[in-house]
Length: 157
Image 1 (cartoon, rainbow, N blue to C red):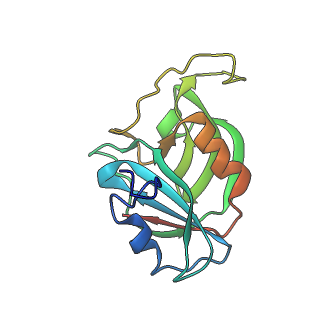
Image 2: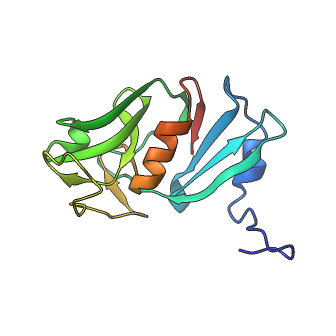
């Protein structure tokens, strides 16, 4: 939704919700599961400003749901395969939210070494389809991997 000033407005109330949280870094990430959306904020409690808005995501299916809660990022890997969410696929730019739950790219063929030269195996976004991880477009997964420090608070709701 575009406001009168030409800026994108807070359609799902995420900007307002962010204000009640703190983070040990200057960033905060909110994941709105019902709207399959991820927003990144910069600032501090009570004065968070949108840094990156409206990243589409895929979350866990009903049998392996993405858990709600407040977490802190703690581990990164440039490429992964073999875990439950991608046992027959390769994913890129994995950033751990909690044990067994990561932000990562959409799925690529098992063994893929370069996502920039290969087509995705499963580029589905906006659905409940993963095994609890939060899948993002490659560029958005890389953005989180590149810019979010260990300890950044992630609120999944």
